[in-house]
Image 1 (cartoon, rainbow, N blue to C red):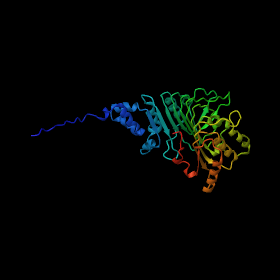
Image 2 (image 1 turned 90 degrees about the vertical axis):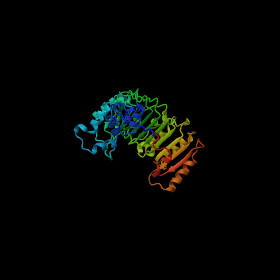
Image 3 (image 1 turned 180 degrees about the horizontal axis):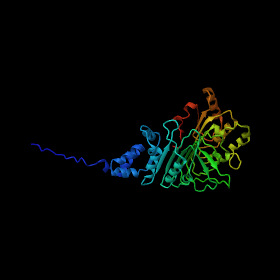
Length: 372
């Protein structure tokens, strides 16, 4: 008679809780913050992992979980963020607060709330910070100085704020390697001597729909990617742009940032081709290998001269993408490309591509969102 094997299952045994802490943390990283928080109810082991969780994301999906049930004054999204944030038992490496003004917006936090969160994050080891405070009426929030001077931040993305840059700007963004500003207004104190901001480790800088860009005077020796799109009521001054052209590898500009449509700008326009000493570019741009210009106006002699200068001074250039202005047909695009191809090029490998607006943001151009 064959022996029967008797298996006894211990129903009280929790195999999931016995997983290594590293695996539990990895599981939480794959979950939305709402679901990650719920794991704390599984057991004491999971609660400990949750309190040590280093990545928090509060976005439209987070808000939707509360819109399904009517919350009271004590259970608002802002209060829940406070409870989750201030209960951390360890550092917070990544924090994302992303409001979408069109889809299930996060109720507007007060400046007081933003200040508390920023102070807490700056003291708790935050390395990657994404603050998207979208507002239909423009930037309303001031970014706290504690974030500008935070030594742990390496990647910073902010949207819908204004930044009041100090006169003595030493020590801000000291360890930051990637900066992206959207719908940001830069301000500077009128008192004292304004100093250039040294950002020694910065490699990627993106400015989109920003105002007062020329007030953001920086000297980043390691900058490789520069993107300036749709500057508001402000053209890119040569004294701001020229120093960066000597070191960057990827340049992404918008024609509106280069255009000079007002008569009083005509004299300043030629300075776009000058360095900080008022001299035309005489040094070759040895590092530059990719250029993208959106909304380019080929009828502007200065914009054409600007591109001609870049082509003639960039021996490492490999790819140039020109995105047409509105109302340009295929014939005009071929004509524009022909004009560019007749320009002298320092790089024999430089390829020039002219595309329409409908494909400007597609991945084929290889230059969408270069900061990612």
